Length: 167
Image 1 (tube, rainbow, N blue to C red):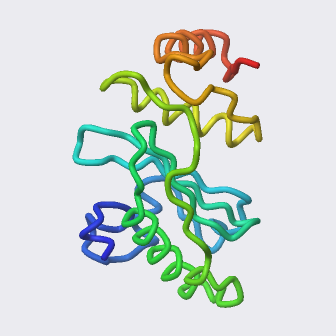
Image 2: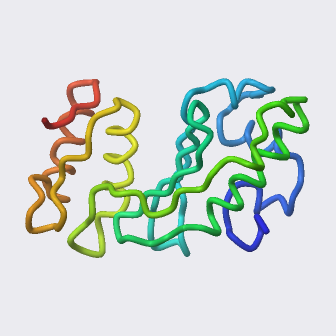
């Protein structure tokens, strides 16, 4: 269940999804949420780790990226359940959200320590949003990118007023 997974809608005990989205976004979303091509959902795991769930509306997939390599199946299930309720509420039955595939453990950047998960979650979201290839190497040692390098890149981007990335 969503409450058991600790993701979207859990804090309301299955309450009004529109109220939850309004709190998160600062506005009423209505049926527009599933008109986006991708929806990025940061996932907090036990108040000590961050991962990323992505709803790829165009390809009708739920994807999970974890810089420590976790599978995230239960988070994807909870997210699919949440969006299926949302689609029903907004008469978007033709989307068939409950039948969309779930793809856990997508290859993405992997952190080499226990403290850079939020940085890696942000970088993964940025690369996916820009449709950039993950060219990070297979291991932390091979990767051209490090947590420190990503932190510096993010800080520079904030100072410059735009998100930056490396090629």
